[in-house]
Length: 142
Length: 142
Image 1: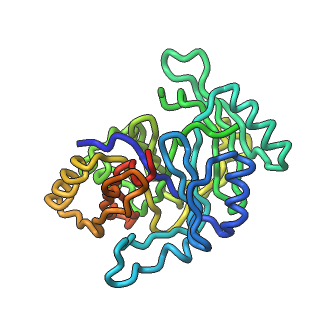
Image 2: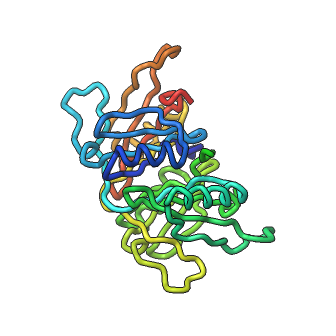
């Protein structure tokens, strides 16, 4: 047995309202849920991006809760990378820069066997300081 | 513009060797990279799961580095969910239990419109305490 795919990826944010605006308006993701002060969820392709307020998710579920989701929650700067083509990365860089979002790094990875050129990655931060990336799937041979 | 997919999802672990064994041997994921004391990476479908030692990834890249990956790193219990069918979840539960991994929660979500029954989720922990889940994609209408 082997997991076939990642369904949910999570980041923790310190300001849910700012995160909601950033992921929806700057990144254009489709928002699918919001629970006041606890979380904002977005669909992304066949996966879901979960943005949590760790102060809320660290709470133990109530005894006898019907949906006893176990506690979790981190502090610090997480990381997540979105898939993008070379053309899209170029356009994302312009879009982020125009929106006042600094592109913190921009480089090509070493070429893998059979590749003329390695894939490109650009890095930027969400309002909570999480390290976000757009990268070509070929950096992983995908 | 809208990101088409999540390419990389990250968790932070306190013991890379224990994490490597767990994700490879208990979950059966395909390991694609290991950098001593910094990270272990696994392929999962069309995505990549990154397990990091935050003490290493919080370091600033060297000035002039060719691959200036920005620092990141969290402390605490993160969350990630793998996609699984109802049959697979049943088998994962047996597999985890046989391997001495406690299933911390096991429930069905409320049915969405058009569903006879909501999707099932099971939750367990990796050796660093991250909250892992197997869930049916239909919990998100996927």
